[in-house]
Image (cartoon, rainbow, N blue to C red; front, side, top):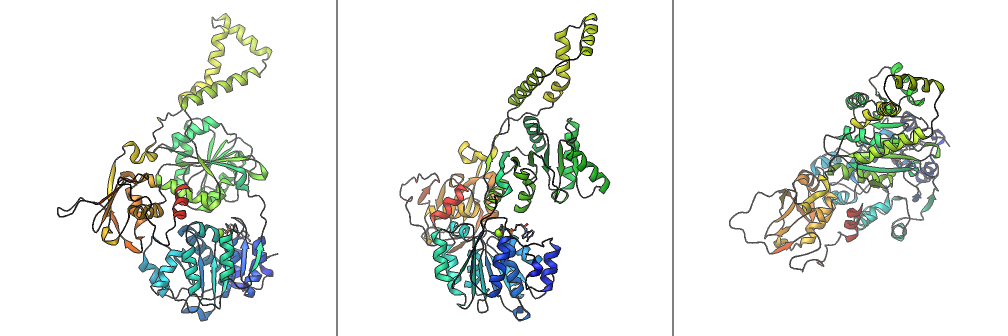
Length: 568
Ligand code: ADP
Ligand code: MG
């Protein structure tokens, strides 16, 4: 069924057409008409099946000129990335519908900016449950005219400990409303929400085909800063793919990397939007015919590339967007064939971004050590042995050997020279890594640490594991990454790896602990009046006083949520 068979406005049809959508996906076919009739829907389908449009199109369609003053639709998403992304999609659907004003609200970003946007008459609010509730409590998000609440990735939101926030939101919006819930799985928790907050919900369930990404083995490598090109050379040499795609985020990087690989004798070509069409066609043809082994491209240039038999995709740069990751790695593993995708990571921050991608794609991305140069050399030698074992020689070859023998070069020397001509050059150009692991060292290996300062202390009846829990929650780092926690009367210091300091400050401002808004700054030393801290605590579960491990967590801050972050 096509979108134009739906009873929706021309404005939306035009916008959807521009996005290149014509056939609806299954979940869209089944849920859009129901949602437009006002039915409460429970939709179940996997990632990548087009759920955003399934609820986004009816949401956008429902907005009228009467909604210029107040919010009419709330969409809840588990993470800020997903909220931003859903907001972007909805804006595209609403391109020609001027009455629609979307607003994304999520934690860790300026409250003031969001308030200003809400005041300007946003009518579709897309946000994470915590921040949406925050706006509701401050009355900066008015609920009187809410007609529709949509829970996207409901199971993921519950996994992340948003249950109370969601229930608070649902019990505050007017009862006369439509409640839509999408989830990949239907655990009892979700059914409970459905029962409590939906009216005669209709289930829509799509059994999805195996997604292509499931056929792709996904790995990542930690690479020291500034050595990604060397790492790529080593990997290309180690795996000798017949056909590989390498993705960079910029055209400039494509050009530089192409030149660099060509210099090392690798058959590589670049592809990006600044190249002339004829040149691009030539590059593509050569790649399709396997004359070019390595194609280096930007996301835009590679859109829609459908070459069979690509065995490996490398993410030289981490993609800027979850969807890009799927598009990129989807270049391999096509038509039911197995493929492999490797991503190069150079910082802790990138590791978290990749984790987010893994969560979004529901894929497992496993860390691998960079191959050892000596192992690669050994493998190369074996390959030569295999190759020669399987070869036969012609008469002309013996003629040449006889001639050379006459000049005093014996057969052993001839063979050695021939083997070296290909192999030695390749071996000599192999980069070497000392396998430094700066990123994982943390405090455990004595990496440099600094202290951060939180303006909350004993006077707020705070326990160390509240602090640790909040830090783990906000950063996605593991509890073991944080060092000693000292709680003073009105502030607390926490030892953190210096290399992560920026990231931690970035991701914790603002932060809430036990209902109090907390500011996090660099600790600049104690004032002389300050009393010694009462509580010492280290993060590895060994409280020095042994008293705090079982401290009660504040409500709304579940253990589950933290465990989840630590693992995933
Ligand atoms: P989900 O939320 O189910 O994971 P998304 O809504 O993010 O899936 O959609 C996945 C991708 O499919 C997006 O890139 C989206 O633009 C695209 N898409 C969605 N619906 C259609 C359609 N009917 N035709 C073509 N592409 C679509
Ligand atoms: Mg989605």
